[in-house]
Structures are given as structure tokens and as C-alpha cells.
Length: 197
Image (tube, rainbow, N blue to C red; front, side, top):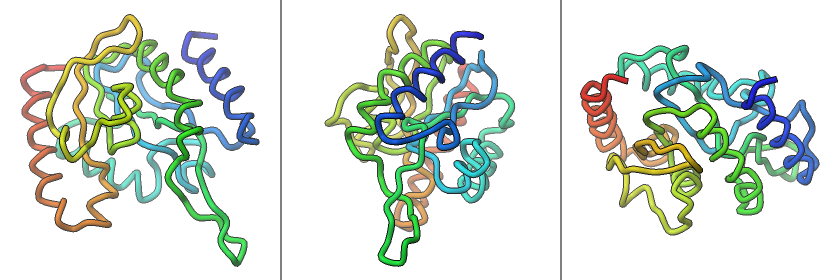
């Protein structure tokens, strides 16, 4: 069992406090020594069903994202801040996604930082506010202010460059972000090209 597997076990143990089991967990995936790590918010229904991050519609968004950057899914490590699906049950008994609660984020945050330390990427790309705040360990951090602005960050003993982006799904809900998101992706591409990860 390697270091990441031990961290996954700790994540499962922490998630049990939210009545979650192994079947609910969606762990990180990809190269365990990747130079680039992508951190989302939390898995949705499809990710939970398949036990894989960024599949279904999120996977389509990721494929487009990687195409622009000239990367393959196998080149990077992909994970989420919260490793289980936060959902609410509607009046008809149907589950729908909801943003993670602060207690769920706080439970997983130290483990995400350990996951980053274990993978030791050169660059961590956060998608949206939840992973940004978690990785920076700053609840006041805001994607609107920090998007596409690389900054030095640290996860315990590992230093890396943080590159915050809007979550791709935000473009679906706010069409005015589409152009900004595309510009930010091109800035990330130029940054990565200059780094040669």
C-alpha cells in the first residue's frame, strides 16, 4: 500500500462521519507522479456511479479543457476537494447535487493537502471557489479576484504553483463567463508551455 492509498483510507474514515461508505467515495485518478494536478469541487451522480472523477458531462468539459491545453487525461492527476457526492433529496424523493457544506469541506481539506503533497505536482489547477479556498487555506479567497493569477502555494512540505480557474460548469450557468474562461484557459496554456511540465 503506497502513501496515496493510505490517504484514501483516511478519507473514507473521515467520510463515515457523514454516513458515507466505500461505495460513495470517488478518489483521485491519474499519474501518481503527475506534474499537473486538477482539483474540482465534488463528484456528481455519474462520478459516484462509476467511482471516477470527471466523467459524464464533467468528463466532456474536461476533455475540451485538456484538448485546449494539449494534454491527455493520463498525463495529469485529477481529484476533488470533497470525495463524496453532496446531494439533497427533493419533494419527489429524487437526489440532486448541492454545493458541499462547510463541515464536509473542513473534513476533507487536510486530506486534500496531504494528497497534493503525496503527488507532488509542479502546478495545481483549481476549478472554482471550493478547491481554491481549500488549497490556499483561506476562506476569504475568491475566484472572481484570483482567477488565472498563478501564485506560489504550499501543501505541508511541498511547494507548487497554484493556478485558479473558474469551474467549467460556471460557464453553463453564467454565459457571461464564457469569454473570460476561454481567455483564462489560454493564459494557462501559455503558462504551461513556458514551464514545460
